[in-house]
Image (cartoon, rainbow, N blue to C red; front, side, top):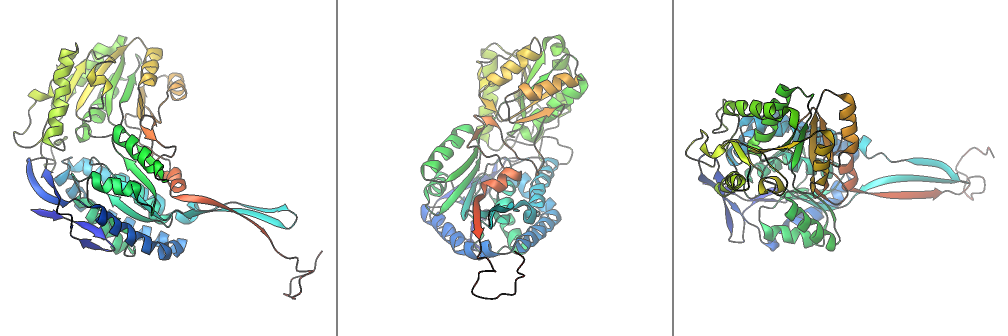
Length: 495
């Protein structure tokens, strides 16, 4: 049994609350570990360590912090497979998905390596007679990240890479469902040269979250998770005077027009809907199909689903692993059953799929004839269930997408460049793909949705991440005229 503890002030610290959580291997359904669940006092200890470490880390030169990020980049790169193994063991995603997660997280560390450039300010000489004005950005202090189970390595890297590079100290509260990789990342940060106390990990549940949100020494909180929790994080954190970025849930639509390459669209829908068992906030969960091609598209998606092999993520032939818990699997399966009762047609029923008898597996499902108002359309399912809604064409499709309260990601499949350009103009969604089903921005842009998918006004990582973890300061300066100074400093008298 793996015992998973905290990381505070540069070392592993056993929990003292007396409470633990169960960690499963989703591929077998068996308990693989027990994770400490922190008390408020243990959160206080981590914050105190971060606060004590802040002055020295904040004073470190930009070149020093960049050097640490470069070292971290090399360590993460060298340990890709080990990090991926942690992810497959506790989340269940197949190794190829796990390695992809590490690669996308690594991009953010690479972005943070450019911190000397990213923190450059502006300078205006002679704004007034003998007066210069310039701007600088400075770190906030102690900041915290509360991260989800579906990307236990990548999402923390979205946060701590920029936060640390900007000169902040960090407290991470990972998901208690797959917490082990957080301690491995802490070890890599230490090897990279991050001083003790600069990065801390507090394992826990709502007790730890609430203490983070109310702690007076935490200046900012970053969160990724469901919309109800994101709203709670934002409202509670801001009520306690904190800067908060809280990314919520999603219901991502993929609009397929009559002129689209249907084989390309079907391949994209299958990969985007069922990859990582649909447990991705950027997964496609609704295909909005133009009526003229809807029958053909549904048939093409359905014929591809049997090729999606489901099983243990460590077996390289498998393309989809289990869901995170048995409870979540059963909840997702309930949406398939409910769709029939609401009048939709289950084209492929994942409950009858060929999956291992042990573990938290559910095969892909495809539901046609879905309409707004049905639970399988309205709710964020977060599992391998793809719904198909039929519309007359472009205008009806965009109207449906814009009416949805979620606005994280969307995509259009078409051969018409004019329609694609109009779509990116018309659609009210934060991240848009043009013949790209999962439009996750590269690290030098920023990640975030609109409407119920984002609380706060700052997206994650990239340039907006740098702004989130710093605050601006403007300096206005005037110096005595050397010509009238009482002390001869040797300046040329060229008035």
